[in-house]
Image 1 (cartoon, rainbow, N blue to C red):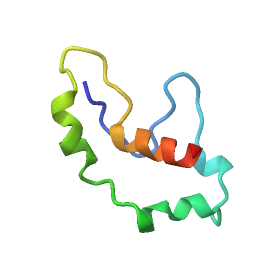
Image 2 (cartoon, helix red, strand yellow):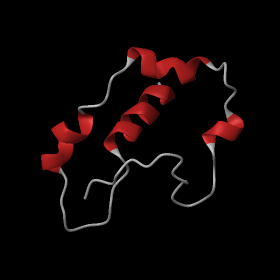
Image 3 (spheres, rainbow, N blue to C red):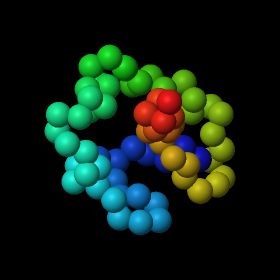
Image 4 (cartoon, one colour):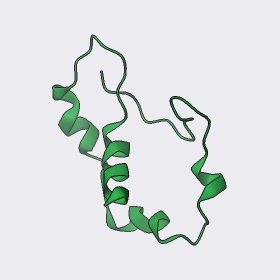
Length: 69
């Protein structure tokens, strides 16, 4: 099941707020200017089961992978 993206959503296993730890002038905050992932959820929705626990939001997962690289 595809989990919904929620604003200021807490982490799954611990409390962490990116707003508290990443400076406002950090280069990674500007990723939204260059990357449009608004269609990702609708494109991937058919591949998610509706019978299990919610997954990590696919848009968030792609952002995390890009930041890791």
